[in-house]
Amino acid sequence: MKTDRNSAALHAILGAAAFSVTGACIKAAAVWANNEQIVFFRSLINFLVLLPWALNTGRSGLATQRLGGHLWRSGLGLAAMYCFFYAIPRLPLAEAMLLNYSSPLYLPFAAWLWIREKPSSSALLASLLGLAGIALIVKPGAGGLASTAALVGWLSGLLAATAMVSIRRISDTEPTLRIVFYFAACSSALSLMPMLWFWTPLPRAAWLPLLGAGLAATAGQLALTRAYSLAAAALVGPFTYTCVLFSALLAWIVWGESLDRLSIAGGLVVIGSCILVSLRRREPRLDE
Image (tube, rainbow, N blue to C red):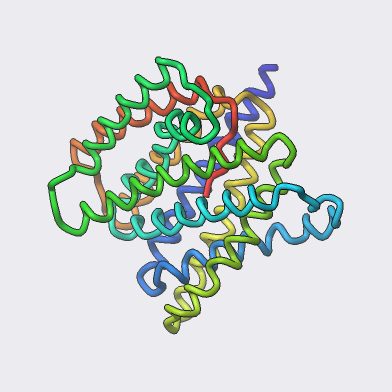
């Protein structure tokens, strides 16, 4: 129904705005906190927000026969998060978001290799075109810190794609909220030891952006989950890329950041290619 499509679009845009705020909070927190601390507190806050749901649903709602699948999903998603959060303070915010949101480009290849889902020729062509756009953003051979950060940002998108394939493997028996909760719980536990190992004292000013990142990310997850429940993924997917626009606007207002012409051209190619690939994809994106 038209009302459902409108509501889905609204929730997708709200989710995208929340994820752009998440990125901005992480960039702000990185002035004081290291990557290990940011990943842990983002995961912990996500877990604490979802804990009332877990307590309300009880043991029956959390019971699973796919613990191994949840661990795979959590490990891959956590690795993607470490890479993504590393890239955010070292790149223009919109560029880091673009690289992470390029994950649909790798889905046809990851699904083909992992779960033997052969992609269509059009999906493969769109993915290859999108990879050319990634090259314009990463600028291989340019050297310097930004180039290293761009490669790590690219890796975050690749890892996010494999995490999404792992979600598909367990989504036949596992509902969305259970998958999101197990990810929050596992990522909190797995990121605790690195956080303690690399702990540095944090000033009071660091806690507000850390809290904001966790709350905004949770709000984004819930809004996007609602969007995908109201309309098909092919209709919702294109609206999620407004996150890049929100991120560019926030970064320009707060830090005076702007993208160079190659990154803008690459971003347009990547977004267009991701939308084309998403038209062939049925599973929702559960963002990190």
